[in-house]
Image (cartoon, rainbow, N blue to C red):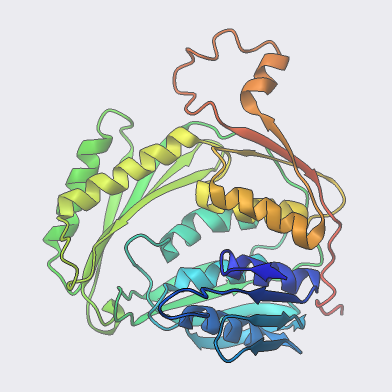
Length: 378
């Protein structure tokens, strides 16, 4: 029995993978609108569509949910995510469970692709898929395609997600982050003047000036059906290292009804600042993808997995707690600074230029030996 609605999505996914029924109680009991939100009900509907035998019971007030997991089936599906939360909210859940389905996933999701303050579909494609890719052998059909963009509040976006299935994940050791060798980006505008894209690019380049010379940002201008139902614009930046690690920074315009209007220059600078912060934190994965890396490490074969993480986020900490709750699995954390001291490499650690944050952690664990029993064996 779990209290509250925090980490609802992740707990549902872990319940599915572990086969353990879970009951959520006291869901927003003192809120003006108590109980589960529309996007949480939509998530349960999506999970029910992709599984066989899943049973969901919500009480009259919506403050209690009983979830009994079924068998992960997968396959082809078209699903409307609504406009309350972006498509990325549902895509995150699919990425957790995709390798363990019975059939390869081919899911078309409609809704909001870009919303201020939320992780975008671009970020999942750029930073989560490379992490996903490290744990599976066959990545032939692994892709996230943005067919049309849809800004908050009216949405209208379409995203296609395809993923292969595996019998088991492979052990991973990612101990090096490498040095940033290039920065790429995408300035997207929908139903607004394209000059906004160039203003965002100029502001971002000005902020990144002096850090690296190899910067290239393209413009994605969409019209008609591909531009969704709401006007908007934003900037998405990625930094790639010599070890194939991706960091991201992004910023998106607010809805027209919002009083806090931001300029294109503000968005460009905000995205660049976010990217530089991610680069400073370091690690062998983007901060947002830490939870996926830890989940797949735990679900791995009975072998040693090692991953270098930047500063662990609060969400990462709760991910480990959930893994302990559902799988009784723990991780070993070694602070990178302690590791270097034990290896007598710490003399110039404080003064070392370009090292970034000193709060990096080397995470080690032995997988639980999870096997995909849903996968058909020919």
